[in-house]
Length: 433
Image (cartoon, rainbow, N blue to C red):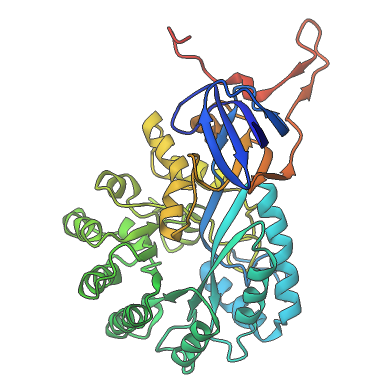
């Protein structure tokens, strides 16, 4: 038998080691040790980690790489970011959005990020962002899965044409119903927007992903309404609550009621560690709140928690590099999730967990799955998060589409090694083979 691709001696995220992965016709056809066969290309993983691709389940591709246009966010705050987006939006052209989005997708592929859910603002009556990203979705489909959310960024009710534009966007082919209930004029309008948006999704058979309670106000509790509407309309498993930063400020008694409701409704929860911790807590002196939802507690209840990057060099966040390992690395720190099991759970929150939220078919490392793989310069998932490991090879449907040279440093130190490879600094547990 001859395979298209054979990856040898790989470590897998489930802690199996010395595994070979055989690929034919863009699919994984064998996952086992000691495969002996010819292949069009053989990659020796050399005891390094091979994972399914990274997934960013919360992003804003219509704004990405726009930092500096028409000006910089000097304060770095959420409010100035919102103001700046309002200045930028009338200047957007379809061509500019496409060009920036494609450049970002190039960067994403190099980082092993092969699936992105992007919110796209529908409060511009021209729907420039919608038209542009629908075109980008088609342009990148062979190497990146792009899922779009119709996002009434200025408020479903607060913006006078948002409701009409959201429907127009869905009719044009946008995949998911979005919203921002905490940005409506009143709490009641926020509640009603959750109800209306979920009803639209139920009627059309679509998924829901709401920016929900992205505030330090502990009384912003639209996630409770979202859990209720999810149950009422039979949307279990199809609804995501993104940000949920007010959860960090809620008292423990209310949270003890809320978290089981989220679990019962099977809502996917999407924290955005990089953006949340710098945009929230801005009115605090000391102590300063982190602005992260209660990730360990949600995971303990069996809630599917999936991390998003949110932004990359745009009006709200001037950093970002399409690196989901950076996102997981930050989550480990902000959530005090430094136990070995907790770090592994953060790796799952940028791989298999968002795959569930996305509804991504054929994802994983098993016979019959798509041959979408990333070879990391790390021994296991914990080391991958610690090192924010190099992506040595990125594979899409069995073809290598990106490669990065190993990280090696040359030393000029008397009596010391001439070179070092940082990935080899991984700890070895006493008594382990």
